[in-house]
Amino acid sequence: MFRIGHGYDVHKFSENRRLILGGVEIPYEKGLLGHSDADVLVHAVCDALLGAASLGDIGKHFPDTDAAYKNADSIELLKRVCKLLKENGYEIANIDSTVIAQKPKLAPHIQRMRENIAAACGLDTDAVSVKATTEEGLGFTGELLGISAHSVVLINK
Image 1 (cartoon, helix red, strand yellow):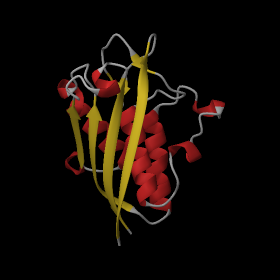
Image 2: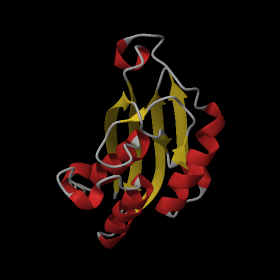
Image 3: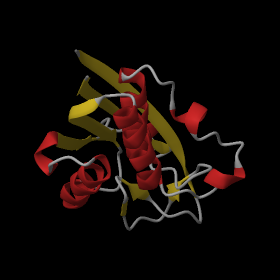
């Protein structure tokens, strides 16, 4: 039985924060605001996986009201999500994600993002796609207010 999940996340830019996307620290003048490391890409992947398995969402499993997740490494959270899927009899077929960011340019970092997500999920890198796009100066990402990400996954049982 195949199941599809979609995840979406958004975080606004903030001063004095590191910019982490796909488990990669990206040099930039601002980071993303969040309770954890605010890795918008990994959060979208987590939500897509949890949604596909009907296991809730990232907020249910790792609430921002729990001090245990303050500044948490989102790759570690993804590992826990993958373990939960496995415990429920699911296997990940593939992950396809898009990061929407006007700046910084993400192309030099995408391969490492793919490798980090694949490793966290126990997948071959060719089962993980990460793409990046801008919104041509439109919307909150285009106005450099934050970054968003979408992820679609296919799992089977």
